[in-house]
Amino acid sequence: GGARTALFNWLYARHTGGKFLLRIEDTDLARSTDESTRSILEGLAWLGFAPDEEIIFQSNNADKHREAARRLLAEGKAYRDFTPKEAPKDANVKDAIKERARAQGDGKHMRDNPYRDLSSDESDVRAAAGEPFAIRLKVPVEGRTAFNDQVYGIQERDYADTEDLVLLRSDGHPLYNLAVVCDDIEMGITHVIRGQDHLTNTHKQILIYEELGVTPPTFAHLPLIMAPNKGKLSKRKHGEVVSMTTYRDAGFLADAFRNFLALLGWSASEEREIYSLEELIEKFSLEGI
Image (cartoon, rainbow, N blue to C red; front, side, top):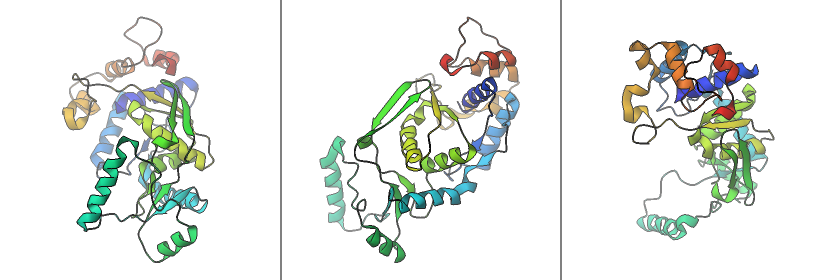
């Protein structure tokens, strides 16, 4: 799936005269290893499409992500959340929290954080006293996010269905949605082509773009590659068969595998099964997905 997504990005960039950029999104330190990064780079090298600029490692930009969160806080578009990381040991308090969640059920109110409307003076005093806090985006109460996905069409979501998302954890660690927005802005990203499982994230990211005063890029989400049981294909469940280097080491031809990937969810307006790389570049379009 990652290789097909990269191929579609690369083909679109070549077709439109743009650049194919690669960013290693390593904010999740537990899942981001040298081995996983090496596997990505080796797979892309085997298939024959290298990025057009230096590879960006997201973790190197953490200070810029924190700066953006602090800016939103200063502008009143975010707030400090002083909720303790661990629930108090008082059993009655725990029971009360559970009871409130149970009573809310599916109709949970996304704006019920007691620190959302804390005065800036009191928030500053508590922070200056060393009380730990996360920074959350203050999502508007009324309205909706909307964008025209280049594959799935118009996508809308009410603000009421999006929580006040965390931008920075209490340890200062930037979260994914903030990091990708900041990096997209800095890298000059015009088009984001990625898996359909990111549609929900896109609504959250658009909120951050808007609060930062930046027009979001164009989004295109790709249908997922499914396993035989119709579940999502993943390395955790399906092992080495999802890795490009597995096919390289087994002797598959890179041209043949690239052709296979291109036709996995995309087609031109003709009945053909084999394309040269030049023909794929010429014929590729988002409308064909």
